[in-house]
Length: 144
Image (cartoon, rainbow, N blue to C red):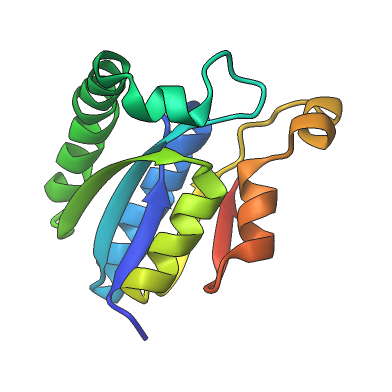
């Protein structure tokens, strides 16, 4: 079994519940926690993926927000619980990015929160947790 748990967070309440669960799980198992914030790209976005990749100002702003407002407080919470922690910001489809990271790192599992979007919205746009559960090479824990 790997010594890393990946947890995807986005600043939402569901992400915070996932982080709490992952901190507890990592602490009990003596595993490292890789806290990931993925800046999503949607086919419904106003900017194309290419625009997002080449718009350095936008990328810098999004990265700074993720690092300072989402990941730094999460890292502090994990480290206060004496859990070895690493953070990472990525761009792309959150399910695809975390699935690839899980395979690349040999993670034991991926933890994400459920955002509680409406059934219609999830059906039309999909959900990160549902997509991740279908494509991830390791177990996925969806925290309600």
